Length: 497
Image 1 (spheres, rainbow, N blue to C red):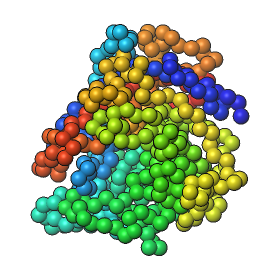
Image 2 (cartoon, rainbow, N blue to C red; image 1 turned 30 degrees about the vertical axis):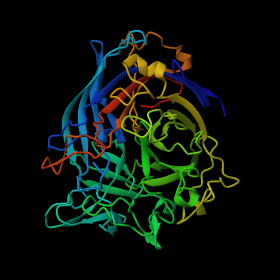
Image 3 (tube, rainbow, N blue to C red; image 1 turned 135 degrees about the vertical axis):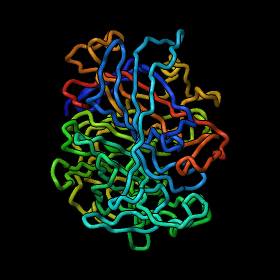
Image 4 (cartoon, one colour; image 1 turned 120 degrees about the horizontal axis):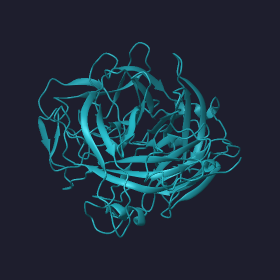
């Protein structure tokens, strides 16, 4: 396997047959109490973002285009509730500037809210973020997770009801105006039409499907806000994805022929019940350019193990080439509003699948099928993908250029805890700042790598239920959605867009 080098102004890695680099180019934030056109708080945007590639232009010193942001299941720090699943649309304008520690720059990325698309199930019924405790079947669909609620699903009077439940985490824009979304509850991939109606659900291998008491069980042990003492038995699935460890990552090849998705960490049977044993997660490759969505590959990804002994779970991935991808891996409970202020690992890393074992079609894909022991030891004979640490979000020499920091005081400039999204934009040849230190063409091309944080809808001035219910998060915090933009050198031969 040839080496390629990924570079940044402060980080370089060689992985497979490539090399890359990057430096921080901007920061921005969205207020914690911003609201959409339906009156609800705009939060959780960093769960996934996607650029409308055709919309992006460079003109008069600025990049301008459209970005879609996918919230997850809604405000749930005090229990899941009946928020309808949605996608937000923004216009963005990014003006590259020079910044140093001695002369920090002001935020140079502007985001303007444009619209919100509400998502519905196959029959047009609104989707929900409530924890599912049942299933429902529609013609042409696999069993879907179903949440049955009392009252209005927000803890108030109502007629009750049942809705398909999603905890949305990954987003890909189809060339035909459709949306592909990956989910944590079922560990499924879904397709929605341009009006937000579900048209397809892709069930992942049986090994991924959460099971309890011998049956599919899509609950993530996340009680509703109106019944905080509710318990699912057993608490953890006996096999399949762990609670809140479903399909966090979703990306596509530029031609739209392939989708790639990855579990946040190992399945229960592969060590997923322990934060110190859940290293061996799985990456799936689907062919999607036909009526049938066909699984072609299932690879093992060994996630980083931190100095604490805990595994850095992954939160997003981005296609780079047929064999290489970026992966966003991070620690937890460190950042603005969190228990600690200093994170020890928030990285955009590189993986290469060239030499990895494809376990698709083996017993590893069956219910309870294993690629590792319950202690997290990879089975002999299975070669994982090559994993190469690369770009750290936590570099204070870079963060300081925009007044941000990792560690230190709990203030509004402290980096947020959760980073869960990627998007990329090529550096334009007329961009005199971005193009100024361009490497030789033989060394690759430069791109801006954009990442949004997930603020968990934490605010003291929040609204749910189409603006009818005000909420105050019990943490006492207001966590804005932060945005970072890095400039990265991606190796020759790569085609991320």
